[in-house]
Length: 308
Image (tube, rainbow, N blue to C red):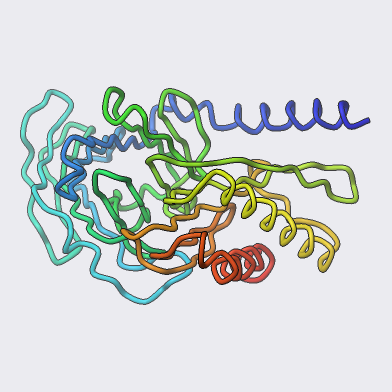
């Protein structure tokens, strides 16, 4: 019976993955490409391609709030060196209309925007970039095209740069360091970490027989044994909360990810998202696991309260 359930789970995940395979070839897909060549200076060079842009002025904006933390933030202060090009590579006119908004004119229905993001921090709201990691809160990192909210979105991390780094996110992995979201809402609700990640997962079965994957993806300075113990503790929490509610929520792609950063170069925080959470602290598992695990429990509770 377990083998049958595992087989059905594999088919289910394959189907859900296939649902977003069309993103790579969709004519309206917005594609963000990350250049990691200057991360040691806390800089990320970002290229975004906007196809099928309507005639006239095309407006791009920087978000001012973030899922889970809705206060106004000045994310745009960390964006500079903007340049815009058409499909032929010709430079387009770009003017800053206010603190968070830029107008692009003269395009031919396609706009390629390039800019630099500075990020020297990282928590549940702000991003952090350095030679140890990318800790990306999406609204703090990515400009968006006005009136393109329903377009599919793809994130690409350039091949050949930091190839030893891996990626953890609730975005759907399309392979070849490409990750997909069905629209901007999901994209901006999908924090992403890139670096030397220790990870493992377990499966949880609902009373109806449906299985889902719970993943723990962690950047930390500790040992494999400390990670394994924390993974087991996280599983206990998930199972305990499942008993409280009688079942787990149905996660959109059959998977929920705990994105954990426990190291000296991160800020302390916890922030819920639809199929994942960020849990961070400038502390390690060796001495503080019994305190850090409380945030894991708190954030998972938001799967029912706030997120659903």
